[in-house]
Length: 150
Ligand SMILES: [Zn+2]
Ligand SMILES: [Zn+2]
Image 1 (cartoon, rainbow, N blue to C red):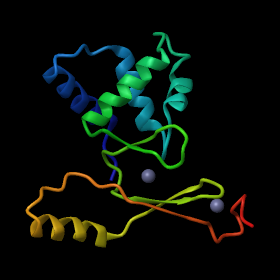
Image 2 (cartoon, protein in one colour; image 1 turned 135 degrees about the horizontal axis):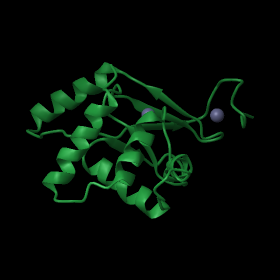
Image 3 (cartoon, protein in one colour; image 1 turned 120 degrees about the vertical axis):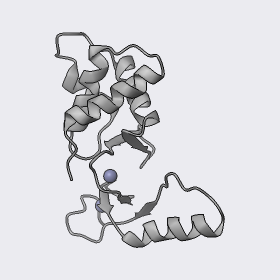
Image 4 (cartoon, rainbow, N blue to C red; image 1 turned 135 degrees about the vertical axis):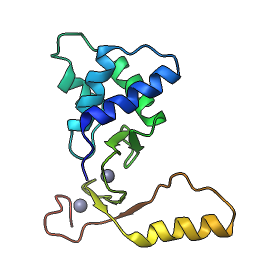
């Protein structure tokens, strides 16, 4: 399932119009960079991708645009280790959760439909409208590929 970038841009534009914010070209550039990036990324990654562009984009602009994207549900954020916030695109990407190796900090994505069932069942039981969830499993890779495995 892939959502065309034009669609993502128009959702973003509708949101900023509603919030009466300016639609600047740099915001669109940052949005496109976020959606062309596969998997997880941080603000610096996006900054390095877009800084060569015609309009000069500052790291601060990248940060506050990513914040807007999060507010509009176009990206979600993670704090996997004690490092900086990581982001990932949401539209057109399957719902998934994460497993994080405490040794090499590798992040593995997994998808289990039972988690969706928990959201629905518990929401119903406790009369709660579940909007989002965060599930991170921490541990140690058992694979030989773990760079820090003992
Ligand atoms: Zn992910
Ligand atoms: Zn590992």
